[in-house]
Image (cartoon, one colour):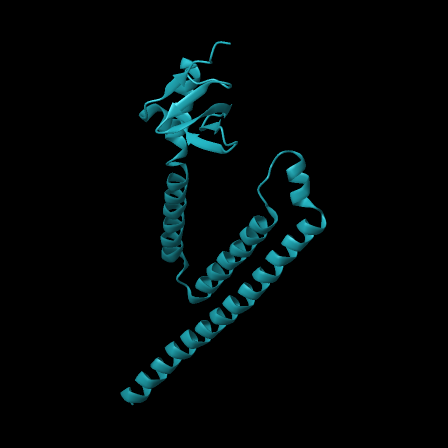
Length: 186
């Protein structure tokens, strides 16, 4: 009698779990397919609307159509995973873990993206306040000589005698010996 009760209990537990597992796999598959279709559709719609051309007219040169399409796709993937986990009834703990992981990855990505920008930006502020290097100056540093063509908050562009353009990060200008060459008197 006890053996049949035990097997009935095991069958009940596993039949419910297996059904939930199968349903969550179906949710994942359908969700991933829908997310991919919707992401590509959004990208195609933006392409038909000349979204990137409109952005380039206002000075934004980075192509955004594929980026927006991918963001939509990944949001769909994320929603599918959440729905599948909800079907398995493991959402709360896993959501907190996934959320923490996503935030950590975003923070790390942002820090890695700006690690070179920040020192160059502050060096640009310092160079701008000192007015040491200005447009039109002829300078030499580490064997490179040229005329300052452009100065931004992050870099200085030199035009060499061979008509090459060289980008020098502002932080590098502060760490390197820079020689200002006076114009020749005629």
